[in-house]
Length: 209
Image (cartoon, rainbow, N blue to C red):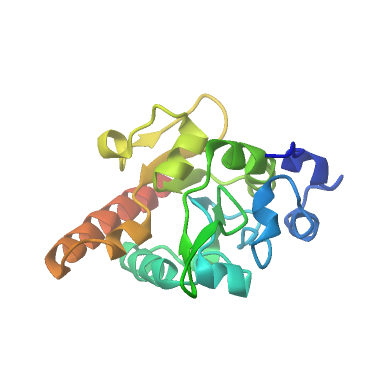
Protein backbone atom coordinates (compact mmCIF):
# COMPACT_ATOMS: atom_id res chain seq x y z
CA UNK A 1 0.00 0.00 0.00
CA UNK A 2 1.38 3.43 -0.85
CA UNK A 3 1.27 5.90 2.01
CA UNK A 4 -1.82 8.07 1.96
CA UNK A 5 -2.39 11.22 3.95
CA UNK A 6 -5.49 11.02 6.14
CA UNK A 7 -8.59 12.97 5.14
CA UNK A 8 -7.41 15.72 7.51
CA UNK A 9 -5.25 17.05 4.67
CA UNK A 10 -8.43 17.72 2.62
CA UNK A 11 -10.59 19.44 5.26
CA UNK A 12 -11.61 23.00 4.33
CA UNK A 13 -10.85 25.96 6.61
CA UNK A 14 -14.60 26.57 7.05
CA UNK A 15 -16.26 23.53 8.61
CA UNK A 16 -19.90 24.03 7.58
CA UNK A 17 -21.72 21.06 6.02
CA UNK A 18 -21.82 22.62 2.49
CA UNK A 19 -18.08 23.48 2.69
CA UNK A 20 -17.22 20.01 3.99
CA UNK A 21 -19.32 18.30 1.31
CA UNK A 22 -17.62 20.33 -1.45
CA UNK A 23 -14.14 19.57 -0.08
CA UNK A 24 -14.88 15.85 0.40
CA UNK A 25 -15.47 15.48 -3.36
CA UNK A 26 -11.73 15.63 -3.96
CA UNK A 27 -10.63 13.55 -0.94
CA UNK A 28 -7.76 11.15 -1.65
CA UNK A 29 -7.11 10.24 1.97
CA UNK A 30 -7.18 6.48 1.29
CA UNK A 31 -7.12 4.16 -1.76
CA UNK A 32 -10.92 3.77 -1.85
CA UNK A 33 -11.36 6.96 -3.90
CA UNK A 34 -9.62 5.26 -6.85
CA UNK A 35 -12.50 2.92 -7.74
CA UNK A 36 -15.63 4.55 -6.31
CA UNK A 37 -17.80 6.69 -8.59
CA UNK A 38 -17.89 9.59 -6.14
CA UNK A 39 -17.68 10.63 -2.51
CA UNK A 40 -20.96 10.02 -0.68
CA UNK A 41 -21.12 12.69 2.01
CA UNK A 42 -23.61 12.97 4.86
CA UNK A 43 -27.03 14.47 4.24
CA UNK A 44 -29.55 16.31 6.37
CA UNK A 45 -30.00 19.59 8.22
CA UNK A 46 -27.22 21.07 10.33
CA UNK A 47 -28.85 21.18 13.74
CA UNK A 48 -30.49 17.75 13.34
CA UNK A 49 -31.02 16.32 16.83
CA UNK A 50 -30.24 12.78 15.72
CA UNK A 51 -27.31 11.67 13.53
CA UNK A 52 -27.15 8.18 12.02
CA UNK A 53 -23.83 6.57 11.08
CA UNK A 54 -23.67 3.51 8.82
CA UNK A 55 -20.61 1.65 7.56
CA UNK A 56 -20.15 2.90 3.99
CA UNK A 57 -22.14 3.70 0.85
CA UNK A 58 -23.38 0.74 -1.20
CA UNK A 59 -23.78 0.34 -4.94
CA UNK A 60 -26.87 2.59 -5.27
CA UNK A 61 -25.43 5.23 -2.96
CA UNK A 62 -22.20 5.30 -4.94
CA UNK A 63 -24.09 5.84 -8.20
CA UNK A 64 -26.48 8.45 -6.82
CA UNK A 65 -24.10 10.23 -4.44
CA UNK A 66 -26.50 10.07 -1.49
CA UNK A 67 -26.45 7.96 1.71
CA UNK A 68 -29.06 5.26 2.42
CA UNK A 69 -30.94 5.29 -0.90
CA UNK A 70 -30.56 1.57 -1.77
CA UNK A 71 -32.49 -1.43 -0.38
CA UNK A 72 -31.11 -0.98 3.18
CA UNK A 73 -32.02 2.72 3.02
CA UNK A 74 -35.61 1.89 2.05
CA UNK A 75 -35.87 -0.51 5.00
CA UNK A 76 -34.42 2.20 7.26
CA UNK A 77 -37.03 4.70 5.97
CA UNK A 78 -39.86 2.27 6.81
CA UNK A 79 -38.44 1.61 10.29
CA UNK A 80 -37.97 5.33 11.00
CA UNK A 81 -41.57 5.99 10.04
CA UNK A 82 -42.76 3.21 12.37
CA UNK A 83 -40.65 4.68 15.17
CA UNK A 84 -42.04 8.18 14.62
CA UNK A 85 -38.75 9.71 13.45
CA UNK A 86 -38.83 12.00 10.39
CA UNK A 87 -35.89 11.23 8.11
CA UNK A 88 -35.92 14.86 6.90
CA UNK A 89 -35.05 15.92 10.47
CA UNK A 90 -32.11 13.53 10.83
CA UNK A 91 -28.55 13.66 9.51
CA UNK A 92 -27.43 10.45 7.73
CA UNK A 93 -23.82 9.58 7.08
CA UNK A 94 -21.29 6.72 6.99
CA UNK A 95 -18.00 5.95 8.74
CA UNK A 96 -16.41 5.62 5.27
CA UNK A 97 -17.41 7.94 2.41
CA UNK A 98 -16.40 5.82 -0.61
CA UNK A 99 -17.93 2.51 -1.75
CA UNK A 100 -15.55 -0.43 -1.29
CA UNK A 101 -16.47 -3.41 -3.44
CA UNK A 102 -15.33 -6.59 -5.18
CA UNK A 103 -16.44 -7.45 -8.71
CA UNK A 104 -18.42 -10.69 -9.12
CA UNK A 105 -19.09 -10.97 -12.83
CA UNK A 106 -20.70 -7.63 -13.60
CA UNK A 107 -21.95 -7.01 -10.05
CA UNK A 108 -20.19 -4.85 -7.49
CA UNK A 109 -20.46 -6.55 -4.11
CA UNK A 110 -19.86 -4.72 -0.83
CA UNK A 111 -16.46 -5.38 0.79
CA UNK A 112 -15.82 -4.53 4.44
CA UNK A 113 -13.59 -1.47 4.92
CA UNK A 114 -10.31 -2.04 6.75
CA UNK A 115 -9.51 -0.38 10.07
CA UNK A 116 -7.02 1.99 8.42
CA UNK A 117 -9.61 3.06 5.82
CA UNK A 118 -12.08 3.83 8.60
CA UNK A 119 -9.33 5.69 10.47
CA UNK A 120 -8.28 7.67 7.37
CA UNK A 121 -11.88 8.82 6.84
CA UNK A 122 -12.43 9.72 10.49
CA UNK A 123 -11.76 13.49 10.13
CA UNK A 124 -14.84 13.83 7.89
CA UNK A 125 -17.02 12.05 10.43
CA UNK A 126 -15.70 14.17 13.31
CA UNK A 127 -16.25 17.34 11.25
CA UNK A 128 -19.83 16.30 10.39
CA UNK A 129 -20.63 15.63 14.06
CA UNK A 130 -19.08 18.98 15.08
CA UNK A 131 -21.05 20.86 12.41
CA UNK A 132 -24.39 19.16 13.09
CA UNK A 133 -24.10 19.08 16.92
CA UNK A 134 -26.67 16.29 17.33
CA UNK A 135 -28.10 15.43 20.71
CA UNK A 136 -27.93 11.69 19.92
CA UNK A 137 -25.77 9.59 17.58
CA UNK A 138 -27.16 6.23 16.44
CA UNK A 139 -24.54 3.80 15.09
CA UNK A 140 -25.95 1.35 12.55
CA UNK A 141 -23.86 -1.83 12.63
CA UNK A 142 -20.55 -2.89 14.15
CA UNK A 143 -18.24 -0.81 11.93
CA UNK A 144 -19.90 2.47 12.95
CA UNK A 145 -20.25 1.41 16.60
CA UNK A 146 -16.58 0.42 16.90
CA UNK A 147 -15.48 3.59 15.10
CA UNK A 148 -17.28 5.62 17.76
CA UNK A 149 -16.90 3.45 20.86
CA UNK A 150 -13.74 1.43 20.36
CA UNK A 151 -12.82 -1.94 18.90
CA UNK A 152 -14.00 -3.86 21.96
CA UNK A 153 -17.62 -2.68 21.59
CA UNK A 154 -20.07 -5.54 20.90
CA UNK A 155 -23.50 -4.76 19.44
CA UNK A 156 -24.75 -8.19 20.50
CA UNK A 157 -24.28 -7.15 24.14
CA UNK A 158 -24.93 -3.42 24.06
CA UNK A 159 -27.51 -2.76 21.33
CA UNK A 160 -30.30 -0.34 22.19
CA UNK A 161 -28.51 1.09 25.25
CA UNK A 162 -28.09 4.86 25.35
CA UNK A 163 -24.63 5.89 26.57
CA UNK A 164 -24.13 9.39 27.93
CA UNK A 165 -20.47 10.40 27.61
CA UNK A 166 -19.14 13.21 29.83
CA UNK A 167 -18.80 15.45 26.80
CA UNK A 168 -20.41 15.27 23.38
CA UNK A 169 -23.68 13.75 22.23
CA UNK A 170 -25.40 10.68 23.64
CA UNK A 171 -24.67 7.56 21.66
CA UNK A 172 -26.47 4.32 20.92
CA UNK A 173 -25.86 1.35 18.62
CA UNK A 174 -28.15 -1.03 16.79
CA UNK A 175 -27.83 -3.34 13.79
CA UNK A 176 -27.30 -2.11 10.24
CA UNK A 177 -30.51 -2.40 8.19
CA UNK A 178 -28.63 -4.46 5.57
CA UNK A 179 -28.27 -7.25 8.17
CA UNK A 180 -32.09 -7.47 8.33
CA UNK A 181 -32.22 -7.92 4.55
CA UNK A 182 -29.76 -10.80 4.89
CA UNK A 183 -31.95 -12.70 7.39
CA UNK A 184 -32.35 -16.33 6.23
CA UNK A 185 -36.18 -16.37 5.97
CA UNK A 186 -39.27 -14.16 6.13
CA UNK A 187 -40.06 -14.81 9.77
CA UNK A 188 -36.57 -14.01 11.04
CA UNK A 189 -36.53 -10.94 8.78
CA UNK A 190 -39.82 -9.71 10.27
CA UNK A 191 -38.54 -10.33 13.81
CA UNK A 192 -35.24 -8.54 13.09
CA UNK A 193 -37.17 -5.57 11.69
CA UNK A 194 -39.40 -5.43 14.80
CA UNK A 195 -36.31 -5.45 17.05
CA UNK A 196 -34.74 -2.69 14.93
CA UNK A 197 -37.88 -0.54 15.19
CA UNK A 198 -37.86 -1.08 18.97
CA UNK A 199 -34.28 0.29 19.12
CA UNK A 200 -35.26 3.31 17.01
CA UNK A 201 -38.20 3.98 19.34
CA UNK A 202 -35.73 3.98 22.25
CA UNK A 203 -33.68 6.54 20.35
CA UNK A 204 -36.78 8.69 19.79
CA UNK A 205 -37.75 8.56 23.46
CA UNK A 206 -34.16 9.34 24.57
CA UNK A 207 -34.44 12.55 22.53
CA UNK A 208 -37.60 13.51 24.40
CA UNK A 209 -36.13 12.83 27.86
